[in-house]
Length: 371
Image 1 (spheres, one colour):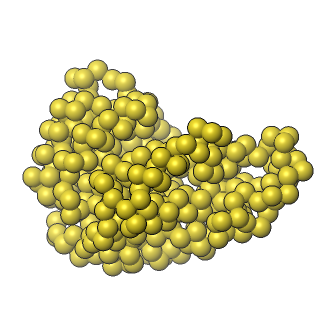
Image 2 (cartoon, rainbow, N blue to C red; image 1 turned 180 degrees about the horizontal axis):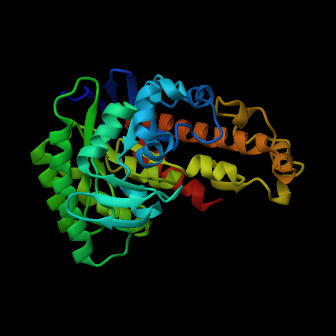
């Protein structure tokens, strides 16, 4: 197994700025990955997504294995060709969606059997099947191990059981993945908000050796401060020379504070989900465009961002689109939000390069407080 080169060029405290060099292009870190659930970042063309500065997107294994299906993905040439995205793609393993969306799921030591939320048909997901779907059928550049992610809060024994099962599945995923050129396998640290369980998980995975390390099982109900405390414990246990990925996070403040703790990669559905519901993300926090105060506001969302949706359309026009039920409003706000997240990542990288990240974090938090 050959890891993609990960070159760290600057540090500011625990934060790192670098580049993960994949066979399909460089990923500048810290990086935010827009979520392409079913082969699309909802509401946007790949040209729009690329124009925001995104270097990589995330695909959802659970949704793609159900529709269009793994075997059909092979016939269609893999996800890159199918959706016309030629940059890197990371796929999640499908485990989280199985636990949260599937009907009548049954977990055992070997894997999980579940019924599709779409048509009720029965499916089976094991570590080996998860690798086959991601690496061989979808053709992802970065493949995630299958894991179990319990919702929090949960009894410690349940969290520990899920963590140990995830460790076992990590080893099976690594064996199934084997030696590959042009694809990497990331492990997932579990353990809830328990420092000792996180330590056990991280140390076992590091000793096994993976191309990158994700921190999973957060942003699932534990709260912001508990998430940060867990990162404080977990991030230092992970190798300095490999990327660290915080799964499913999150709000801009979550990202800013997690970068300061040494996290390199993020994903979240929030930018496009918020955009579809009339919410624009800005440094001061979320802006609800349907509020009456914007009906005659001719200012753009954020003229600093090199994106037409952020720079060229007035809040009044966006307000009108949502009030009139026009789909263009959802497209423009989604486009702006994805561009805003990339703009945020660019400024975080600059702050690390200039060793001014602590000031950036303080200024960002003060801007939220004063809004």
